[in-house]
Length: 61
Image 1 (cartoon, rainbow, N blue to C red):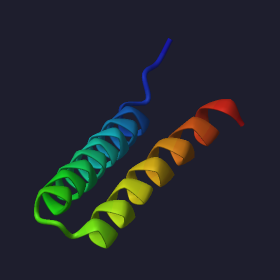
Image 2: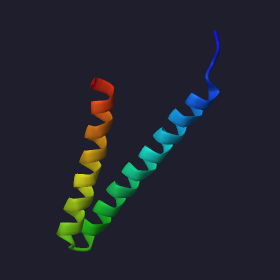
Image 3: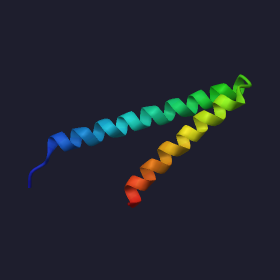
Image 4: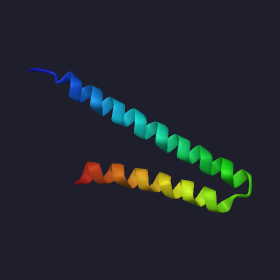
């Protein structure tokens, strides 16, 4: 049994990047809601939903 370390590193990097993007979008959305910028908040939360749905589609299909 051989471990493909490069593929494992790619998966780790993609997961780390997706997590950072998702958390950043959520924090920007919360911050925009507290500053009465509703359009920016809704756009940020829509980005969060898009990232989550893309991840689910990768798992399901």
